Length: 351
Image (cartoon, rainbow, N blue to C red; front, side):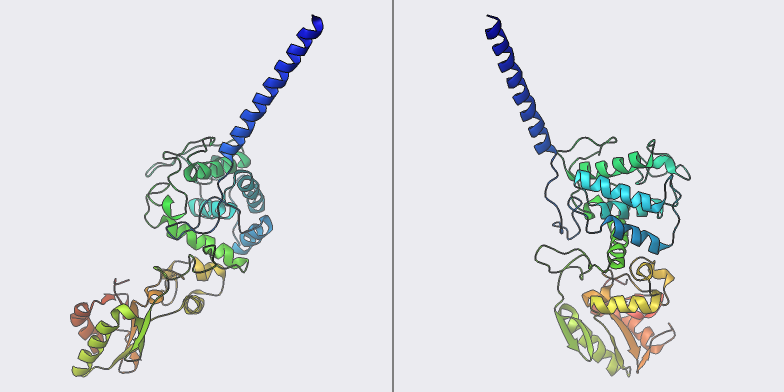
């Protein structure tokens, strides 16, 4: 009888262990990070996946910025913490670091002053409030940030210390705009930092699995070009440009200029006008360049929808220029609008 009881107890224990194992396996499957990497449907990087930058590359980028962390730990330690937390939760550590740099001004400014209660991503900070969530250590703050990104991207994950208002709403960087932050240009600012990080390691912007395109590509994909009257523009506006140049000629004004720029040409232009470093080329506000120059991937020239006009062989640099005055009166008829800080620059959007 004792033997039978022991046998029954043993079988019951084995069964319980098997059930516990199956439950644990189920938990692991539910919480296994979805496959990530590449670009989402909106053309911006997916938040889940493997970081393109190693801890060493993240640290090298940080050192290159020349900044000093006002956090409770130094920058190199932060890079290591983000790499570890990202690998553990299947979140892109490089994108998390880029977001933290955006939210904290490169770890120099926090909602609650220096250290910022180890809040690296404006967690629970709302417009007009100088508060937010607090965490006991830098490691806790980084882990909370990375877990919250996972919850934003993955509706099946619910282990973030501070929960997402809309779990699973935001699988890509682009989808964070208007949800994580109200700024409609939030994703553009974040990607500018991220692409500078990649550039510091000699890596190109993210692209789809087939290797084509990328964040830095001209919006809308490859541009169909046409050269008309010596000006290369998007084929979609070539007839209007031809009509504009022809009509200006009838008024005694010879309009020429530069239109389309390749991504490589835009980078070279930024280097010339903004400075030689990765920050200068990819992150510096265009207003701080001389003359102002859009970041790579953000210029209307890269879409073939902007022209820097010359009047009778010379760049238009003044609103008193007769060609500018003619354009100001007539260009809108042909779908081109001025960027008033640059008398030479006319585009489909005025930017």
